[in-house]
Length: 316
Image 1: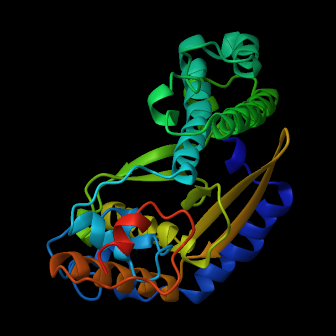
Image 2: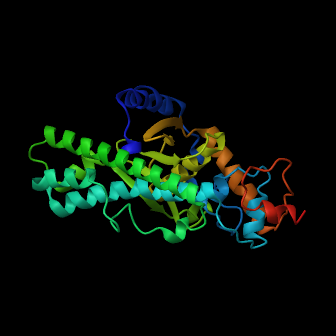
């Protein structure tokens, strides 16, 4: 899990602070995802946006959404988007590789599993696939920096997972493969979700879901923003609509790099009524924008490096 592992202090914060507080606060029943069929969660329009289209507030007026969904403008992702997507893939691949090794080799070959995880990846192996097409638009300097960060992140992920496997094996001498995966790597990455009951895309994918207490995790490689909590809130509502059990906690994992070191900062939060109402309002406003083809106008202050800037300024 690497970036998803909690320190002892963070675990105490969740178990002794956040969880009891989430249970005390409670959530208004009408804002639970399983009430998707009635207001305020009932979808107001037929259009089904992706999660990032609802939760993204980088453009103050959401004109990027208007250009993409109404005007059908297609743009190349900017360097920040390319880097974020690539690093997300690296983080997920390390988890998948660890699970694959455990299931394919078995507990008896745990030394080989640890050695494989901590060894430099061979060309073409999981987490080190050919990414020429995805990175072709980057400058040589940007590409070199991104590949260096990817290597640092992979090593960080794999070392943390290897240590967790060793810890679980040391405490459970008769453990089997499936139990080892469940205890050492209790997370599903890129969890596929159908958000159609809540008026969202049928093809959603959350960064990670942990099972000890249902908690939605979302990795960010940029600056911290308050609206990032909309994504964890949206995924929590979708999980509730599908499985009909409460999801009360979100965790935004901010990953930063300094040389060959990884720094991780976590934003734990209760997915309360306020966040749920905010998400519903964003969904309703943006689906209306698309359905009724409403041009929200050019923002007074555009976000830096916006991929739609050229098209937006030319269509005032």
